Image (tube, rainbow, N blue to C red; front, top):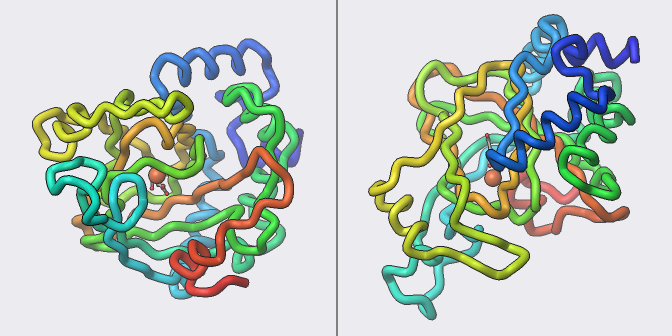
Length: 260
Ligand SMILES: O=C(O)CCC(=O)C(=O)O
Ligand SMILES: [Fe+2]
């Protein structure tokens, strides 16, 4: 507990308090997103920002065109099908094996209190790390002009920690309807309106130190292009509900430039 309180602001976010857990669960159920501001202590945020800046030169940058389902556009769809719209994503990534063993990120990621909180809030039975050495914790860098195009995640939930927001651009935008993955439902009309900007998405204001939990497989989301020289730096904390899962070799090559 003492150790974790050096990393996480447990006074504002008492992760093992059943009332706080229920409050968070209610919020994510109602809003599809949970935003916990000042989640990191000031000291740990400063330490992680320095760690991120030191590792920045080791980031692997990739750029891809993909559809909102993260596939390649295909000729078998009608040209106006929103599931076949091509978007661009480009960012840099530092994989887990380059992050120091004693980094506060490893402390948080492995903490039983943090994992129990996630399990209860997200209604999950188990949470396991990736069994490859690269995918569990990643620093993501969005330099000027870089962005993530509109997409649904492959994973059912996403956990991110903002380390540094861009001065301008780099906003996380999302909608909270449009797909029900488990029931194989997708609202193409609604998605078309988001993609052609006739409906305005929601936007979150995540300052450095904010934790975000999000059901990214059901809700279309994107990161708008960064327009400042200062990059947006964000950590993804990636877990699986099953033991022994590796990110596919293809995805590792794409995002990290290597498989191990
Ligand atoms: O950078 C973010 O805030 C979101 C990242 C994201 O959507 C993803 O990695 O799939
Ligand atoms: Fe995503």
